[in-house]
Image (cartoon, rainbow over all chains, first blue to last red; front, side, top):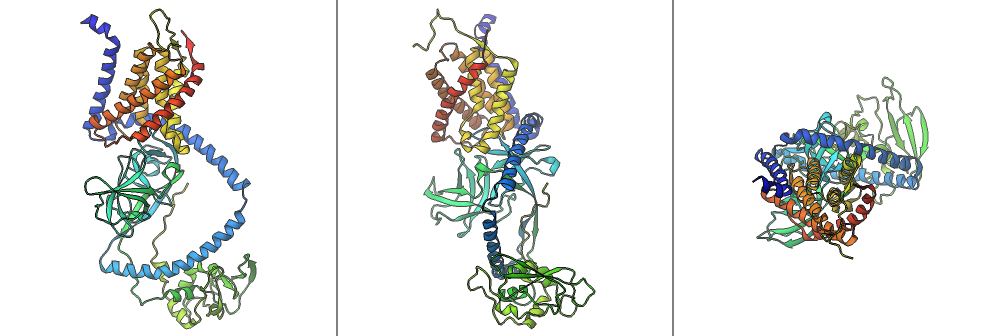
Length: 418
Length: 172
């Protein structure tokens, strides 16, 4: 026996080493995916690797920011101008859409519909991956110390990225949606068909469980359905790139993720979701044109101070510093009035002041401006304000907040940004 | 030029300093975790596997090879989401096989290195999938297109990498 073992010494050791590892695997599998059993050694390994990754990422982003923010500023002015125009257009678009949203909210409240939205997020930086081409995971630089826990949704501004899988003291492991073991409940935006999104060995993403007799067309947007209770409903996931007949009675649908999963740098972890019934405005019907009119400038009787500032290509905007509360014409806040050619966007952002105005009780009792009738919006053809938005009507509506403000969902915020 | 050894030929066995023995696998693991996020094409590369094959072939000792493979594989498992041991088993087999083969082949030869790396890439992938599917019950799917491309990429990269790592060898 001894001679046999000696003769096959190498093979014997190989078998023993393999047996020990198989035994270790069996123990882990028997505990059915309980990561706690191997947590300590994982912490050691992650703790040994991630400090170097953090240092490299910090150096890399520091150098890039230095270059981008202080050296390479070519085209920034033009970009800034374009973005300002874009903001103007989007603000007006928001006004138009707010009424539709209000109607939807009213209907939802009639049906006792509960809506879920993101109320708190935490920004995190991607510092590394799992070191395997077969598993698609990333490491982020926020962990248990930052309040993270498993099964939190990880997103970007473009769409869903994945979910938190394991949490370590200062880093977390995130399973991407293109990992083979990942599964996300999704629905198609137009047809509202539901399915399961899974990753493939190639790192691609497919939509499963859609019957072959359904109509799915390339280009259709895929949204989260919220079925797995991890991702809030309605977040963008990607777009359908191809549709082919698949196995059995299901379609083989390929999806291009909206977030660039291969080049993630910063992500948002959804740390808090909120579920509430939509608040429907119980008041009368409000027209988009009226809301727009409520946001338009009004000329105070006697502006205390006017300092003309000029925005290129947008006419002169007079910034009027109103007198502090207590004075007859005061508000204690800055308001902006526009010349007939000025952009109303400069005023649109001041809605809260307008919404709280009451001609009889509030110091800022701006009278309806004649200019409101003739204001035109730069870059917005046909976006002139209707001339029949009377000042009296405006005042009446100003007693309650505009729908656009009172019902808009809270945006994805980063209130824990470090 | 023959690539197999005859009984009369002396097999050259190398050893490595402790910093190299520990540092090179750790750097490989670090790069494997770090680079694919910056260079997506790097996800095809399995640096820890290449390092395992290199050390196994250079030492030409099956026991040293299997322990090197086990250590690198288990550490790689610790960074991933799956149970620890899948890469460990796969790289143990590769370490043992590569060192056993290293005793019979002239692994200084570029062609032999290319072939050995290509073959052991598939051995590694095969063992990994077998363990993952039938022992851990993971729902992994094999992709031939990905496997073939990754095998060739690793084999080409391995030849270059071995050439660099040859400079760290010490004669026994």
